[in-house]
Length: 200
Image (cartoon, rainbow, N blue to C red; front, side):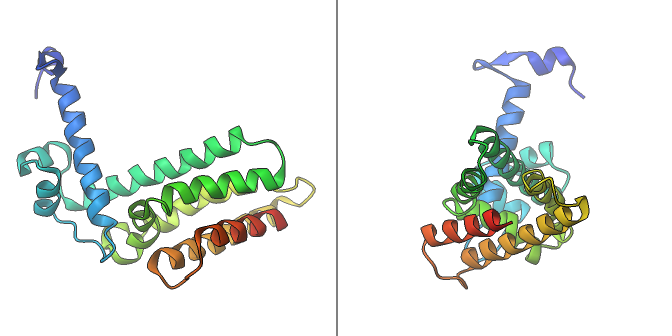
């Protein structure tokens, strides 16, 4: 294991720690491209190294195996989605229609305008065994964001069920849009999702 001094030593203006972080990010972005490909996941250690233009040595510097990379790619996209939704809600006026539109627009910009990320988050858990439990694991976090915006005069149980139901409906809508079974334009998708949320 390298000493802290070796890790902090600069070469070409960057430290070893910085270079390792940059290589890891390149592998993650290559993973997003491959896991979110339109024809379905084609992610192997060799493929991701070729795509990132790195040798396998650098792959194993960051990840013990292919499945750990897949999980890291998923968490990378999921973290961006959560942050986009949190930022949208925080910056929106405290008005239900405005909140709903801000949240839906933020999600669409991240997941539909960049369909690779949408496919990683919503479709890859259905096809990649490494993610078989991750799609469901993410739903409570999204449900909590919705539940916090629901009317407080409803019971906690009703708010929880409404939030879970809305997340399920929105997940299926976005999944159908991404896999091509739902053929509507982007504005129709946004408007419909906003109506679902505001009616709640």
